[in-house]
Image (cartoon, rainbow, N blue to C red; front, side, top):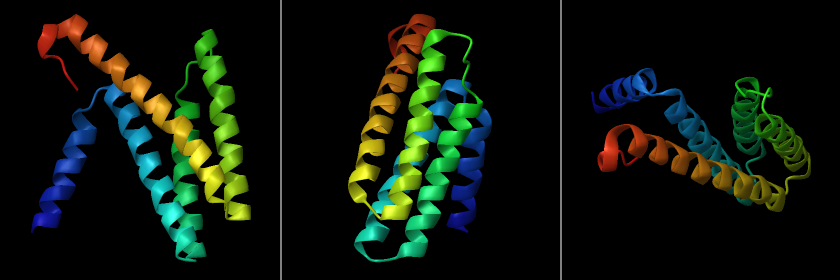
Length: 132
């Protein structure tokens, strides 16, 4: 019963999230899968590593698809996302945690920056109570 309640909560969270919050969820999901891939490499679970890196790549690809490349920063982000995606392919082939950690570092930076943007927008729109 509690698993069903959790799934309902997750569906409602995604269904009611703003586009900015959805992007934040994508970054957090990517980080989760990167961590699971690193753990799988350490345990020698190659299939789990592959599955989690592919999930992280799909998230990065989703970020690429939704990116507005008509503005300079969007075009720059596209190049960074493409780089991250290629590095994850390389990490998958070479089983290299260091490459995953490189992508993880970029993802953390993007996530943290995005979180600040959301907080600033909330503060501007709703006053001091708009904390994420």
